[in-house]
Length: 357
Image (tube, rainbow, N blue to C red; front, side):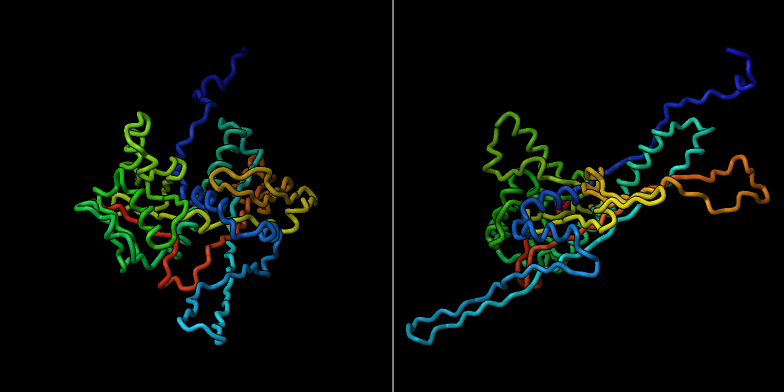
C-alpha cells in the first residue's frame, strides 16, 4: 500500500447495524386464514375484485334470516313465507408507501448500498403491514357482536367466570378462566349461540401466555387431552403489537374463519405492465413481507431533483441530482359476513378481554 493522508481518518466498519424492531401483526394472519374459508365468496367474485374499477361496487346477494309462519290448521290458506334479501358490499382500502434511492448517496458513505436498500424495503413493508393490521382490527371492532345471550353462565365455575359486558360489547374472562379450559368454554359459548365453527383468536402481545404455557407443558408429554380441551393449533393463536392490553392481561377478538376476507385489486396499468420512459407499472410476483398481499408497484429509474443546482451555500459537486424511486400500493377489498341486524343478532366476531383478576 502507499502512504496516504486518509490513513489518518477514523476507521469505519462497513458491516452496518440497524436498530429497527418489528412486532407481530396477528390481525393480518387471522384475516388471511379466515379468507381461505370464506366459501360464501365465489371464485368469480374474487376474479372480478382483482380487476374492478374504483368507480364500481361489487355486491353479493344474501338471504335475510326470517321467522316462517307455521300453523296447526292444515288447509288451502298456505303461508307465503317469501324470502327477503340484502347485499354484501366490500369496503376498499388503500395502503401506499415507497422510497427514493440516490445512487450518489453511497459514493462517500460506509453504509453498503444493498444493505440500505434491503433495510428500507423491510421498514416500508412493515409500516404498510402495521397500517393494514390496524384496518383489519378496526373492522373487527366495528363488527363485534353486540349480543351474546347464551352459555356464559353455564361455563362459569366459581372464580372461573365468563361474562358478557353489554356496555362495552366485550366477553370478559376472569384470570382463573384463562388457562386450560378457556378455549373449550369459548367453543361451548359460540355453539350455544348458534355461531359455532372453526375459530381463531388474536390478542395483544403475550396475551395468550397462560394458555400457550399449558399447551407447551402438557401437550408435548401428552399428559392432557388437548383436543378435548378445545386447544386450537398453535398457528390459530395470533398476537399483534397494534392492540393495547391496558389494565387487562389481554384484549383481542375471537373470530370464526370466513367471517372476514380480503382480496387484492390491481388497476389496469399495473395488470398490463405498462412501460414508458424509464417508468414501469407492474404487480409484485410475491406477497410483500408483513403485509402478506401482492402489491401494485411503480418504479421510476430516471427521476431527477427539481431543485436548483446552484445556490447560495450549495456545493454543486455534492448535490444528488439523479435518483430512482419505487411506489408500493396495496389496494385491498375487505368482505364481512352478512348480518342483517348487528344490534340484536349474534355475530361470529367476539371481542374478548382477559381480566387481570
